[in-house]
Length: 181
Image 1 (cartoon, rainbow, N blue to C red):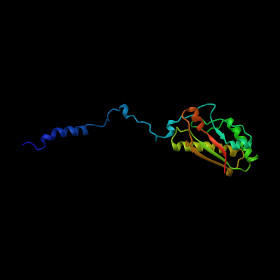
Image 2 (cartoon, rainbow, N blue to C red):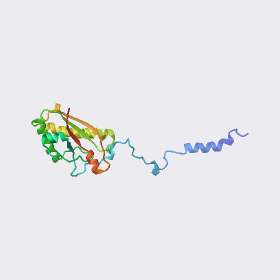
Image 3 (cartoon, rainbow, N blue to C red):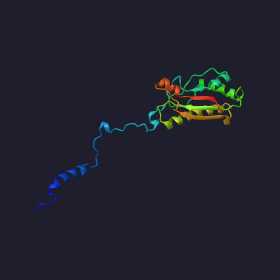
Image 4 (tube, rainbow, N blue to C red):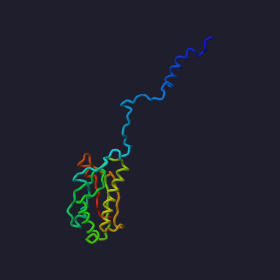
């Protein structure tokens, strides 16, 4: 006598072989199986290990109010991509700001430092980079005699970024030096 399941045995065996027959080796990868970098992947994986060596390797933008009060010529320098390094040109103008805030016309006033980044990194990364830039300037200013209680550093990350290519991204990478409240 035939089993009542005989008519289903072949299709069932075929289905089971496709499930069990995979073995230990996965199918070969195709181009569409390759991982794609997502917007949530860490920004550090998309950034160069070393900042480019360029004449625009740092940025300190002094507010007009400070420039006029301290008699400083307006600086025009910018941070390199993924950098917090100050250049000699920046330290010269920061020395003038420090003198102005410690013994000059703005003695005793609050100094506010706001770090910025270009938009190419992730939001958290850019906020941290902006803060690191502001902190680098604050550290320099404290070393020149600024009162820590009169020096405030913060970050805006890439919130104010307007660039779309290297020359305009360079303008996004900066620390704004302003009078505090």
